[in-house]
Image (tube, rainbow, N blue to C red; front, side, top):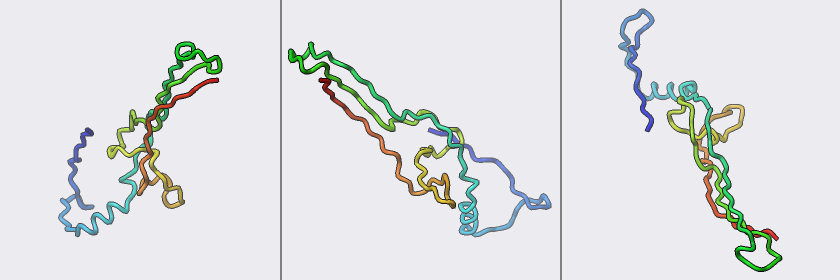
Length: 127
């Protein structure tokens, strides 16, 4: 769980007096979400992307057939885990999920599919 604390800031007018200007929520949130600098995060991360664990069984232990040299059994995985994200990434967004590459949205995370994770078993025979 990521702990966040709200800033304890006082908002003042240009003359230093306490801000007492009332703003409609639609205006405030429209301005907040259109300012993309609030959402800039460092894209640094450490990820276990691919792994392979293979055990080779000599054919002499399983069969007397000289045609088969060995059997391999492997556990394979792709996109297994995010091990570390930069502390500015409080929303825990996968840095590889950004799909937009147009001029207006390079590096923007918007409606992107999460990278798929797969773990499987592979069996091989060497002749």
